[in-house]
Length: 394
Image 1 (tube, one colour):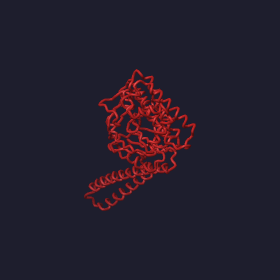
Image 2: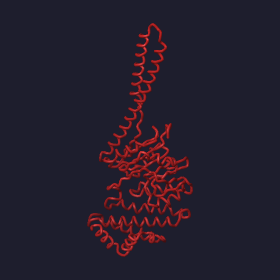
Image 3: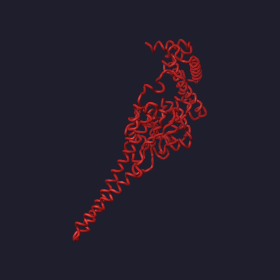
Image 4: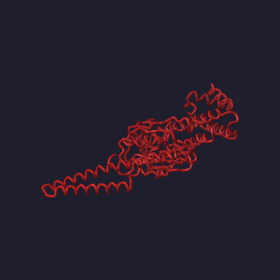
């Protein structure tokens, strides 16, 4: 990746209330090995943060721009010093034997010093080298909107998505880029599924996405494909938007073998205790049910391209997510939530479990623990919630 002047890599980082982790995250993205100067841009999309993250974004961008400008000035100074030295040496040699050697040498030195000072002033006062960090401030529209904003602003050939509480290794970009060629649309370094050759979009859905690989981090996307196919993160979802994005990318490729799967991500995931699925029950948790229903709706027209077992996996995931939401409801204190919301959530969970169980092979694919939970919930939903809560309190 040497000798390139164009931006090759765009890293999009949505930022919301991330003051404690943001600097570490961005620094890891900027410290990439084997990425030439000018090939990388990091796009910070501040999603209406109120904890000081907005200011930190601006500070990081300014600091990077200043570092690059300073480095450029040093390079210019070294080059000009070398040029001045060579010119001075040539003049001194030519003047050897002349009676006015002292006067000629003094004049030459003064001319060189004036020329050098003039050039340095031009460098200081002219266009300074632009930093690698671009900052975009928006209102609080959510992570999907932030990522879509980053996609629109990106200039690189390849796109990466990094969460502001995570970081990447120095070889993150190079580790994925080495697997790409002109026909590569996606490189997945998660290691959930590996293949020595490129696979199709349908194969990727079945072997990787539905194999608990539902996040966009740790992957490299071809930006032109994303923009040409108008693939966006669904802004109606607050949970599960990554799943739908990956399915949309895969479906647009279909039978084309354009996806590489390896195990060299270099992505360092941080298990955030304040993550989307770590807090107590709230209405946005219903998006976890909605995203798997959307996934099924997208895949149904492709039944001839995807095996029946893929739909068993979808159904099993629908049951697991419904049970996850039920568990959050069970842990709510008495009177601590909107009863109408709880009733609606219970109805949606029950409907999703009933629908998933109609898929042949779904129940058998579940582990014994999940099977017991399903049976108990089907027999008596209220009793199931009480038993779950008692179990967690022990």
